[in-house]
Length: 112
Length: 112
Image 1 (cartoon, one colour):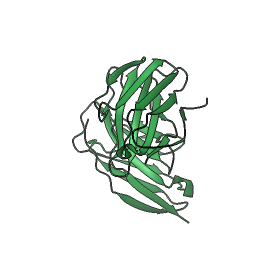
Image 2 (cartoon, each protein chain N blue to C red; image 1 turned 180 degrees about the horizontal axis):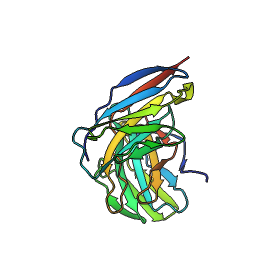
Image 3 (tube, rainbow over the protein chains, first blue to last red; image 1 turned 90 degrees about the vertical axis):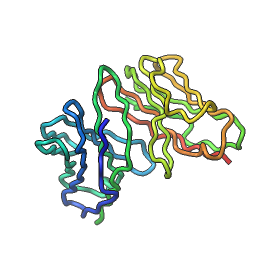
């Protein structure tokens, strides 16, 4: 699976959009981009994933560049409860298995 | 849906003792994963099962660690004998093949 690069930390004001970047310059054509987050003392939580089109769900939007070498997770109106570590993971979805390898992630702090 | 249930939430034991961590996956899920999280090494995948069969245990640190999945609704991770460096938060996750992982809230293990 391709490696990802994320900034170690970011800040965001409550109510503003949080834009979390991820670089995956060695991504292959059959690799998906997944985002998870981990709020303190809890297990990681799935947010969103995509292959090449932009995706949106009730939690966030995922913007993938046309060359697929980078992506941005957007939390449109960040709240204090969005303070967490956000993980960008690139992986193939093979015939069956969902093995996920986590990097260091981005620690997002949302402040009042 | 009760989610992935792990027990106990906290475990404190002395070096040399046997420790058993338990996991009940989400009903209907056929893949199960054990992860370990420490400050130094982050989230590490230890082992995963598909249809109760261990698929990849390359992340298991050494022979003191063993995992079983006797049926689709239960898995254990055992450490015997435990050592202080095994202190960590252990997460269990489950999924249907091809869908995102759902994590439990972990077991915090302290070995003194």
